[in-house]
Image (cartoon, rainbow, N blue to C red):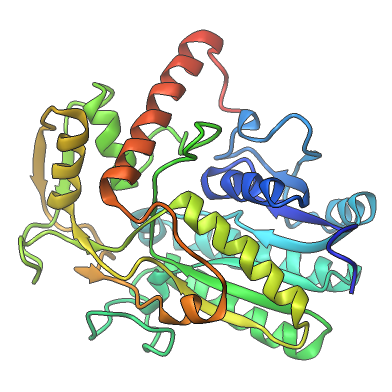
Amino acid sequence: MTSSQSSAVLVTGGAGYIGSHAVLALRDAGRKVAVIDNLVTGFRFAVPDDVPFYEGDIADAELIARIVAEQNIGAIMHFAGSVVVPESVEDPLKYYDNNTGRTRSLLAAAVTAGVPHFIFSSTAATYGVPDVSSVTEDTPQAPINPYGWSKLFTERMLADTAAAHPMNYCALRYFNVAGADPQGRTGQSTKGATHLIKVAVEAALGKRDSVAVFGTDYDTPDGTGVRDYIHVSDLAAAHVHALDALEADPARSLTMNCGYGRGFSVLEVLDAVDRVTNAQITREMQPRRAGDPGELVSDPSLIRATLPWQPRHDDLDTIVGHALQWERILSEKTSADSPDKS
C-alpha cells in the first residue's frame, strides 16, 4: 500500500459542489490532492490554483492512467456524476451512462493502475421509500428513480471489484447535502440548482421570485417532504476519516449512511431561511415531483461508531447561514469577474 504521506488523492468532480469541499478537507488534513472534472457542471474557480487540475472525462482510461502516474495517486474519491432526481426520470439513460457506465470505466482504470482505495459518493436514494422512519444501512434498498438505481448498481460494482482485486472501498450514502464552506472558499455554484436550501437563499436574495413546494399532501406533520440535511463540510470531513479507515485496514470495506439523524420539512427549512434573513420567501405550492419519497431520515449510528467523525455544523440555521454567505460571495464574484461556467 502506498504511504498516505507520499501519495495523493484523486478527486473526481472536484470542481463541483461536494467535490470542491472534499478537496478543501483533504488539504486541511495535510493531504496531497489532484482533481479531474469535465466542467459540465463544475467550476474551474472552485479548485485552488495550486491543486493539479485535469479537465477531462472519468471514462478516459488513458487520462486516468496518466494522472495516477504523474500524481502518485493512492486513492480515488469519486464525486463526478449527475444528481437531479426528476431529470433521471425524464432521461434515465443519461444517468446510467454518467453514473454507472463511466464509473465502471473509472474502476477499471483504477484496478489496472493498482489504486488500492476508492471512496464513492452514494445516496440515500438507494433506499427508495423505506417503511421505517429512521433508515439504517440494513434497510432494504429499493430505489424508485433511475438516479437511485444508477448509484445502487455502482455500489454492487464496488463490492464485486473489491472481492476480485486488491482494492477496498467506502460507499457513503448521503442524505440531503446543504450549506457551504464556513470560510467562504467554495459552495453550491450551479445555475438552476434544485437543492432546496440553495433555491431558498437565492429567493431570499432576489435571484428567484419564489420557492416551489413540491407536494403538500405527504404523510408528514405539515404535509411537505421531510429530509435529513447535512452540512457539506461535515460530509467532506467524513470522507477524510473514511480514507484514514481504508488505509488503516486494507482488508475492510465500508458502507455507511451520512446524515445527522433528524429531519426537517420543506416548510421548516423555508421558515429557517426567513429567520436567518429576517424576511419572508414567497412559497408556491405545487404537485409532487416524480420520484420523490415523502420522508427520508438517516440513522447515523454506524458511521458514528466506525469513524472518529464529530459533526461541527449540525444546526439548520447554521447551514442556512453558510449557504446564504456563499450566495452573496457568488453574487460578488459574478459581478466582479463575470466568470463563464467553465
